[in-house]
Length: 400
Image 1: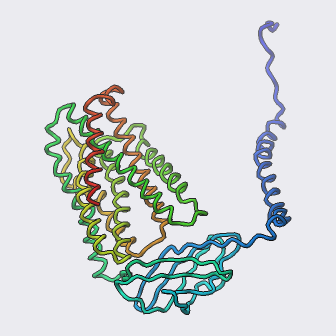
Image 2: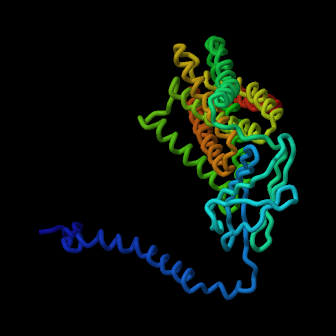
Image 3: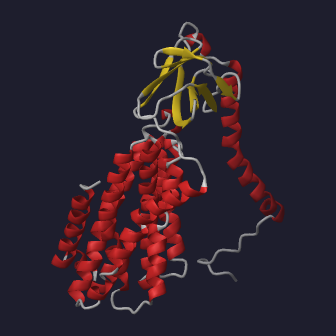
């Protein structure tokens, strides 16, 4: 006899069990079906058009890139608004000029086109370009100092590569020369160096993020540049954290130094873009000033890379590889920046760099906590190290 406190087994209908996945899928698809119906109503029936019949069409456009070749000004234009933008006239220095547009015709929403304007621009002088839409809306672009866009020939690439090496690899390698001195530190000294790394990287993180927001602000508002920078940052940090801990433990030693070098490398890619952009804009003095400032600034990045290696005996090829990983991205950065690419893509690059740096900050901080306990994060050595790192990066950034 079955005791009163025991329940008889529940028998499930096999047919009902087989139907359960289909029922679940149906409920999951139902919101999608309803959403499609709502969108069809808005796009086909167009109930809101009555409210905007008397309003003028909204036309927006952004001149994302300017390329100057002898006798020719080329613009890359991206459009937005409630209707396609038709470029009807082009003015250069207040005079109407002939032009060609590719692809021909109106520029659709978020579409892009290239506009070529035959014009004898003068090197070293400023020029003002105004695009007039068919409805008379002006879109202006000012060239502060006209200079030919660098071409992708051998000598130019070599020259720009040298600039990238002086900007990235050389200062990082210089900072790595301090590693032997770091090896003589005691426990508090090592903790200070790790905290110094956190301070250095924290400044780089905020600097990279602010650069990303600045570039995002130059793109069309419809592209949601600032939000894209934040999302890119979080996705990058999450992906790198997953890669770094794929074996179930946090990276240390050479592995952590490699992640630090990778994050700094992405940051140096952004610095290369800034220098290349100054070259493309014809601001040679500014480009030289940026290279000098970034070189001074990046020496401290070598300290950050070397910090996780304290107490270990890495070989010379390890240091060489870390210096190349951290500094070499500055070379393609200068190459790409010199071609005056869209600020939206530059903003994404900065977002990726910020995400990589954020992941490294979390890993280095967690390493301090593992070695000395959670209380170590509030120890004088750590707090002073973070403060010194922030101060060093700020003071060297004044040269930029």
